[in-house]
Length: 257
Ligand SMILES: Nc1ncnc2c1ncn2[C@@H]1O[C@H](COP(=O)(O)OP(=O)(O)OP(=O)(O)O)[C@@H](O)[C@H]1O
Image 1: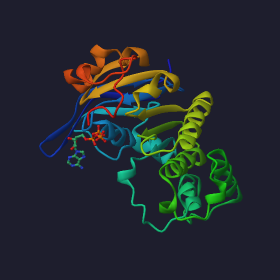
Image 2 (image 1 turned 45 degrees about the horizontal axis):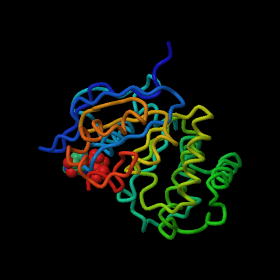
Image 3 (image 1 turned 30 degrees about the vertical axis):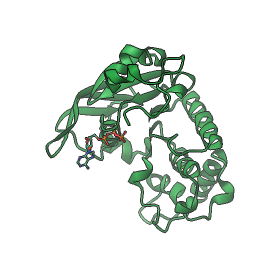
């Protein structure tokens, strides 16, 4: 049997005294779109960073298609759309430069882009509908355009696993629709997608499965199951049941805030 696309096995992470992940375990199959839900501080970004190999777990292990995150990353297999707060938007890089970063693993020691690298970047920019902004400094884009630029980096990279930390936060409707469409297309091409979101309404349309996180994985199953009030109460606290819930039983505002 082939290895899962993402295996997180008993991962614990501390930042000093703070316990961010507590023996969290998760197995994700190839080409699935999985939504990661949890209140602020529940460990979502930390989980992404552990899967990326940017944060080393105190215990447990992570495997991407059977390889360590470091090897998978070196091979260009993992694309990452960080939370906006984690990016220095003043950095003097154009949108084209950011997307070209996805080609570094394909370039030699000199990092001189080949014709194929340039073609891959142009193609990725076209797919995210940002070709006309290629020369613009990355910080001069709207919130949604910035997210799309990072999705383009993953596409140019040829990533088989995409991690997106709140891709819909601060995003206009057009970018939201474009990103959702791209994620479905990438998944149809075999890419495995893990994304965190506070937009619970969007989960069932976009995601094949959902994970409720509160330092541990509390629940992993169909999105509809995750959205059941008793499961949301487990992840967000019992008070979620007393908020102004619409008919669907889903909190109408950013949960956990
Ligand atoms: N670099 C750090 N140093 C110290 N503590 C940290 C650091 N990064 C995160 N934490 C803490 O670890 C816990 C988990 O944080 P994390 O950012 O993973 O949560 P999150 O679910 O992504 O939150 P949010 O929804 O607000 O983005 C929180 O208590 C946070 O304050």
